[in-house]
Image (cartoon, rainbow, N blue to C red):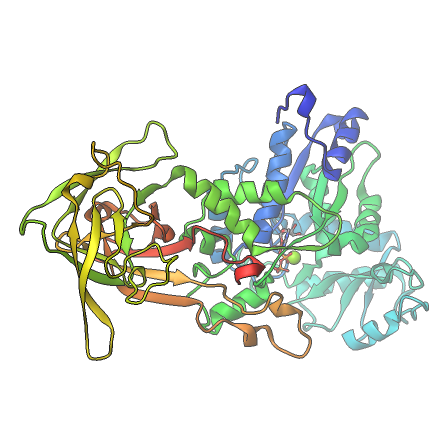
Length: 561
Ligand code: ATP
Ligand code: MG
């Protein structure tokens, strides 16, 4: 990124590290990052942050960024997730180096290194049950207990490890452990597990393997194999760094070395971001799939109408932190509103229709009003909006007993119909329940928008749709998925208890201006006065469906929450 000299952006701490490494010509001056998702779920907005960071740094420093699937746990992984992850990254607008990488491609090499460590007396096969091993690890303030198998002969460990691979043992019967330090204050250094037995088919390697490497053993070595220079991860891995380095010490020469750097993960208010919890919402049918527009997944945000630009701007704006923090959902919504304001055409739609009859307007007459598509764009085109004797306005834009400051329609009061005429309410009709069913108005023929004589000002402007020309659409309004700011943060209460029962409101028959008939799945619009809307992926000309992406104003702000 280029900045004029006097307003050079200050570097974040990761950029500072990279620049220092470049100055020292570390790793031959290469910058090579990676984004390493585990394919056990769909990506969420936190991953988007990590993607923007890693791929963004690669772009800024003329480097590269790999996509690497961290597929070392076949129990939870699936090809569906692999595909969705690729789609999401491409949609965000990033290009990974070469084809995607898979940790499973390194299983053979990782296995060889493991044998090497055994031969050097730095790893051993333990036969104790898992619970005992955990107990022996002890607590950080006191040394742990060494396993009775810790000092078994190298040849015995080697033989057992080969037989583990050959499938001679059951799940959990044996494990391979690194021999490091059972009294280290860092629990991760107390002879951590390198391999476990898992008789489980893998989505890529099939039944080739029945032993699988642990994350800590696979990750740094994968970085090394790919020539990664800066391995950016979230803070919870800080405590794993000595182990990351210990494994690398065993295999690296002095000329090249990846470096792990940790930053604070993104936390957002009013949502959950663990893939396990998101999976639970999907599996229990509490949402309509991974791409439900209420989900914080990238696919959910896309379906809701978020743009790649808005997510990238959001990631840029929140920056990188070294300490955990929580970002207000309003910041994310601000980013999408800002972008949609620039790019969307303005249209009119009425969600809760109330019929208005303009008694002095000729029956059967239609006028085509010209409305500017996007006033934010100086070169914007306009489109025709038909006007006629019968129109719809919103129910709540009329009040029978209106207070003085109500600048919408009320008996004997005037409003402007956006892009059309000024009308005055003369009368109205109610049903037996007191609900207003029809309004009778007169219009001022001299008040047509954009024409001489239209200078007359009235306080309120309403959106409207011509009744005979209106098209029907289903409109889905979303509210926050959880009623609690931190649904996963309660020890006593399951996060699902905080699901907002009113997070989805479906309007079966909204009335839209006819221009919207052309809307294709994914098309985005500003419905005047109502917010930004996106045609759903299942929308078609026979049954139009729109999702509200976001309202026009911040409804999350505390003051009017
Ligand atoms: P979860 O805990 O939700 O299952 P994860 O961290 O296990 O997520 P991975 O697939 O391992 O998910 O994550 C891939 C990359 O995305 C990792 O580098 C991880 O640090 C990063 N990442 C995951 N969640 C966030 C987040 N909330 N903010 C920033 N980066 C994240
Ligand atoms: Mg993970």
